[in-house]
Amino acid sequence: MARQLIKGNEAIAEAAVRSGCRYYFGYPITPQSEIPEYMSARLSEVGGTFIQAESEISAINMVYGAAAAGGRAMTSSSSPGISLKQEGISYIAASDVPCVIVNVMRAGPGLGGIQPSQGDYFQAVKGGGHGDYKLIVYAPSSVQEAADYTYKAFDVADKYRIPVMILCDGLLGQMMEGVELPPMRDLSALPKKDWALRGWDRNGPRRIINSLRIQPDELERYIDGLYKKYDAIRQNEIEVEEYLCDDAEIILAAYGIVARICKGAILKLRKMGIKAGLIRPITLFPFPEDTFAMHAEKGSVKKFVSVELSKGQMIEDVRLAIGGKKPVAFYGRTGGNVMNEDDVASFIAGGK
Amino acid sequence: MAVFHKTKDLTSKPFHYCPGCTHGIVHRLVAEAIEEFGVSEKTIGIAPVGCSVFAYDYFNFDMAEAAHGRAPAMATGIKRVHPDCLVFCYQGDGDLASIGTAETVHAACRGENITIIFINNGIYGMTGGQMAPTTIMGQKATTCPNGRSGINGYPIKICEMLATQEGTYYAERVSTHNVKQVLNAKRAIKKALKNQIDKKGFSIVEVLTNCPTNWHMSPQDSLKYIEEKVILYYPLGIFKDKDAEVKNA
Image (tube, rainbow over all chains, first blue to last red; front, side, top):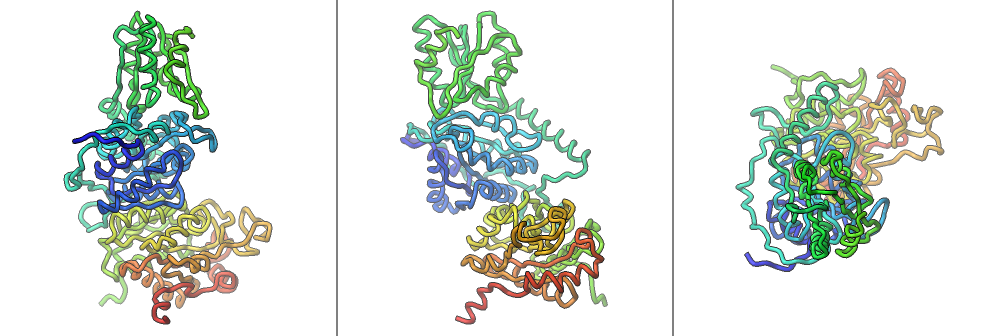
C-alpha cells in the first residue's frame, strides 16, 4: 500500500475505522478535534455511528453502551476532557468491557494550555478514576505508530476485555508524516462477543453488564480476577524499544514524541564522545520493568535520565524498575514547551 | 383458567424495596408491557444508581447498570449498535433530574429512539432521604430538615421542560397513588414503548411514586400525600405527544 502524508489525529481516526471501529462518540477539544471531525464524515461512509456528545462524560458513557452491546467503540479527547471521562473509564474497566480511548495530551493542570504535554502519565498509567484497575496504555512516537497502535488497540481490548488508551500529545496529533495505513478489516471476521448485550433469547444465562458488587467478598474476588488479567497482560503485551543501549553509559528514558527528540540528542552526544542510549517504553502499562532492570545491572551503565514533558512522572516507574541500583536524573519541560535535541544533549553533557 | 399470572419478564428474586414502596408496581407494569408487545427477547434495559440500582436482578432481560445519571448516554450507545432492540432506561429523580440532567435533555434533543421510565418520588431513597431535585416545596428531607424553601431552590419539572424540545416525541406524567392511576400509568408506559417499536423517537413517562420510609409516613398516608400535595406541583397529563400534533395538523 502507498504511503500518504497525513496528520496524526487523522491517522488515528482512519486506523480506528480500518480496525473495525464503527461507533465513535466525542466532544471538541484542542488539540484533538480533527478526530471527531474526521469520524463525522468517515463513519457515515462505512455505515457507522458518529455522535457529537453533549459532554465528555456522555461520550464515554455512549462508548460504554456501544461497547457493552458488542460494537468496536472509541472516544478521544485531550487532557481536561480525559479527566471528565475517568468516571466512565473506571466503570468500563470494572465491567470487563473493551474499548479504545485516545488522549492527545495538552498542558495541565486545570484548563492549562493547548500545547503538547505528557502531564497525564500518572492518570493514564496509575488508574485515573476511582478504585483498583488498569488500562493498557500505548505511547506511539510517530504518526505511523499512532495509526499502527490504534489499529492494534481494538484487538488487544477485545482479547482481554479491557479499555485501551492511546496516549499521545498535541505535537503528534497535529503533525503530518508519511504513513502506510493498515488494511480495512473484514468485520465478519472479528471475534464474536457472546458476553455482549443483544437481547436474551432464553438460551443460556442472561447478560448483565455491571460494575456493582455490593458484597465485599464478591468484589474482592472480582478485583483479584482483574489483577490476574493484568498479570497476563504483563506477560504478553509489553513493548519497548532499545536504542543504542548496548555500550551506553548513560541511558535516557523517554516515550512518545520526546523519545524521538532524545534519539537526535543521543547522536549528538555520541559525536561528543558521550555514550548515550535510550529505552523507549511503547507500553506504559504494562511497563517494561525488566528492560530497565537488566540495563541497571550492567557495570558499564552509570546512570539513567528520564526525559519528559512533565515535572517527572514516568521517572517514578523508572526508579521502581531499577530498584536504586543506579542514580536517576530528570530533565523535563512543562507548560506546553517542548525541549529540542540540543537542550537534551547539553543537559546530559553538563553531567547533571 | 388463570385470570392473572406473574409476567415472565420479572425474575423470581424478591424485591429489596421497602414495604409500601411502589417501585415494584412500576417494575411490573414495564415488564408486563414488554411481554404484551412480544419483544422480550429483543429488549435491553438499563438500571440507574439509586433505589432501583438492582433492577438488573428483577427485569428478566439483558441488562446494563449505568453510572449515576448516565443511563440515557449508555442507552444511546446500546441502541445505535442494536437499533432493532427495545432499549429502556429505568431512572429515579436524583439520577435523571439532577446528576443526569444533561444526558436526559440531550438524548431528548437528539430524538434518540429510546424509552425512559422516570421514577419521581421526591427524595434520595437509597442514601437515606436527602433532598431531591424534585422534592416539593415544604417537603422535609435530611438536607432540608425544615422543609424545602426558596433557600433550597425550586423543584425541576422534567416533562414540562422536555415538552419544549423539538426532539421529544412523547412526554407524560402519571401516578401510582391508586388503582385507577396505576392502570393509567400502564397505558402511558405501553405508549412510550410502542413509540420506540414504531421508531418514532424519544419517549419519557414520569411516574409519581411514594417513599413511605423516607417521607416518614405509612404507605396509605404516602399515597394520599401524592394525591393531595405532589400532584399540585406535578400535575398529571400528557405534555407532549407528536402523534396528537400530527392528528391536529
